[in-house]
Length: 451
Image 1 (spheres, rainbow, N blue to C red):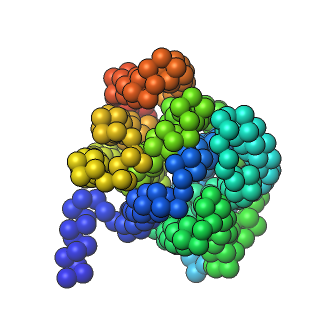
Image 2: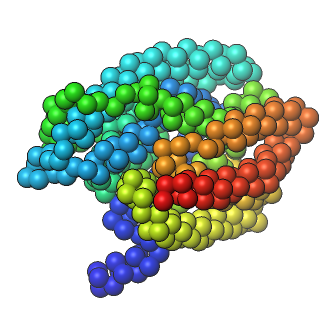
């Protein structure tokens, strides 16, 4: 029975790493769905608006992370492709061992400093925003916000280390680590809501669950691997400014552009329409983000493999794996989006009170379509970025500018529907066509040159 189940999973491209990652994101999505009912019961509509606007402002961490986590996975995979573990010892050419060690050292030092800086910036920015745009609403948000800033900063430091392990080929193991963290977060979130902690619920749950990631690294054999790599440093190092920065600054701009494309809705709606509408947008986007997170597992867990095949110039195997993975991802995405929209339809049809915590059905359907398109462009971009290049830089910046202008203008003139329709047009027409052009042309160009 077990073998038969594994065979069925294999037919849709699900291996061990994807299985754990999907389970993590299913729990995240289930927690999001479950939180819909919990939030509706234990938070007022205004508190719901604060809850989701918190998340959008915390996403500003992308301006500090600067796309380095994904880059670390790729660069680690490139160096480790020439190394291996034997009886707990790192073996292989000293050149690659030393370069891998220098990458780990850079990761720890860089994110240690940036995480502290992020905590101070987020705290100050949040206090200013919510004091300025609260529209007279009385909500106890100050201390929960401070705790969320601390947990976000701790996460900024630990996440690159998990990405480093991914690059070492420990994708399945890191998926387990993330799974435990996510289960803890969801369970604690629900527990604290039921205990009446309100906005404190998310803050304390995040702080505790992220701390568990540290425990899983420090009090396990994983710390032994890190120590071995740390001590392997020799004369050969990865030069940040010569090797990483020329690639990273492009990724950083692309990621920062992504904030204006995907996270600007809630703060703008909070300031213009109030906390209630911002809460509806937040809840709808949470469900859609849960779906995209699950679907993205197919591509994200294959980054080390993509990078390794590119390093070996095995483009035939690379494309076979990518095409199969993308096909599976699209099918699952369509299925989950369909289930979600039918669910929203039924809530409205039977006039269930929870329906009013979501956006109306029409904008929900429109956002679902953009969600599917975004998944495809994400897959194309990931494929190209595994080549240590960033061809999406100009596209990301232009789309961020267009989306920002559209959101600000349409929010003032047409309100919610204006925001949704303007955004959908830019994503499903402009971004999709441009992304396909980049993917098709750059893949042909790079592989032809490299052969």
